[in-house]
Image (tube, rainbow over all chains, first blue to last red; front, side, top):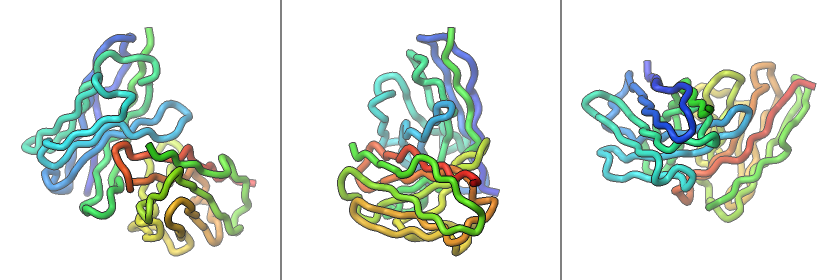
Length: 121
Length: 108
């Protein structure tokens, strides 16, 4: 079964840091680009970050640029999101998602269940 | 950044009805438009890509159309399992990928 499982979320104080992980299974992780998307409580979807197959192409939303770092370990079938200088606006459910295996359709075809990040004192 | 605008925000409909959801882009996205369905407590699920291609697992009552800046998602006859929030997303010009704010289908 194709699956993505996020972990690492939790309660963190403003200014703190957190590292999210996403474990992939059921497909050849190293063949797929990956992304993080977040959803604040009761709100819509916000794209956060993208990483290419080898990690050489990386992009961030302006809202997290300079604070978040995306990375991947293809040998471990894992995706990561290092988050620093967290603020209340970063409180959200963080999803990792697979990008469809096509250079034409840049859509997110597989999603994890998400891991909740709460930034509060 | 391309802004995606969905309307209406909420739609109250009865099972069996035909419903049309709208998504408008602030500039042309060609046919690089996707729709996602999200049910409470679940992650989004890819529904439509390329503006009109149905993703695996979704029945033919779901259809997408449009190109350029105006897109629609039509559900021909609403079933109980279709009540959810629907998001459109453009992937023509990225980063960033941008989503609409969603349309919530609720039971009338």
